[in-house]
Image (cartoon, rainbow, N blue to C red):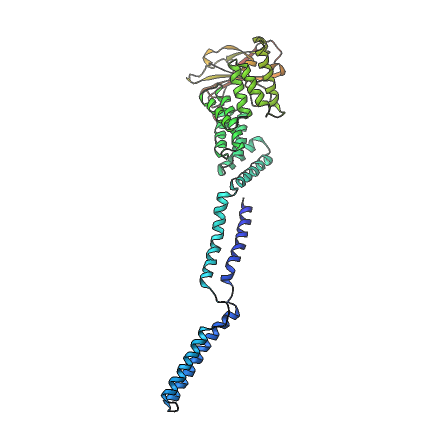
Length: 408
C-alpha cells in the first residue's frame, strides 16, 4: 500500500500549493506602489507644514494666512487619503482563511477516505500479493510453511494467509495448529464477506475431523457457517453426513444435492455424487453389506516389550489413506486398553461422504496411540504402520505398534 499513500500525499501536496499560493506569492508591484504613494503624500504634507511654520516665524506670513494655508494642506491630505486609486488591497483575513483551508485539505481527505474509502480492500490486495509471492518463491512445502508463519507473525491481518496455513496444517496431520489458524482466518476476514463465509464452512469441517462426532462445538460451527451462507458446500456436506448417520437418507440427499449445485467439477463434486447415490440405495432398501462394500481387516497389537500408556485420555486411532496423501480416507477411534484387537475398515468409517473403498487398489494403514486423545502426533505417542495393503485381498493385515514418538 506504500505506493498508494505516496501517490496520495503527492496529490495532496499539489492541492495545498494551489491553496497557499495566494498567501505565499510576492506582493504585486501595483499594490506596493500604492502603499508608497500614501507615504509620499504624508511626507510632502509634513514638509510643507514645516515651511509654513518657518514663514510664520520669520514674519513673512500672518497668523490668519498661516491658519488658512495649514487648513488647506490638511484638507488636501485628508481628501487624498480618503480617495486612493481604485486598486485591489491585500486582505489578511482572506490569507489566513486560505492557509486554514490548505491545512484542512489533507486532514479532510484522510477522514473521508477512512470513512468512505476502500482501505480494507487495499489491505486485502496487499495481503493476497504477499501470500502468493511466498507460495511461488518457496521451493518446498516446509519452506512455504516457515515463510508463511514468519510473515503472519508480523502481518496478522491476512485471512487468506491464515486460511492457506490452516489447510496445510490439516493436510500435514497437525489438526490443533490447523484449528488455531482457522480461528485467525475467520477473525481477520471482513465481517459478512464471502471470504468469511467460506472460512466458517472450512472451520466447521476441520472441527468435525478433529472431534470425529457432531458434538456441541461442531454443530455450533455448522450453524454459524450456514447463517453466513446457506449454500456453503462444506456446511451442507456436514449436514448431509449427520443426516446419513441418523439414517435420514432423504434429508442427506437434499443437503448433498444443494451442496452439489455449488461444488464445481472437482473431487468434491464426485464425492457428493457418490454419497447421493449411496443414500438413494439406502432409501430404496439396500442392505448393510451393500452399504459397507469392500473392507480391510487389521489385527492390531503392541510390539514385544511395549505397553499401552497409562493415560486416562489415551485414544487408539486406526486409519487408512492413499500413499503420499495426508488426509485419511477411513478412520476409527478405539480404546487402546482393548489391545490386541481386530478392526474392519470399511465404507462406514469414511471421513468424507461417498468414499467407496472398492475404488482403491492399495492403501497405507496406520495405528496411533495418542496419549492426549488428539489425532496430531506428540512426543510419547506410539505408532505403527503397514504400507501398500491390497484392498482386494481377504487376508488379515498384521499391524504392530512398534515405535514411540521422540521429543523434538
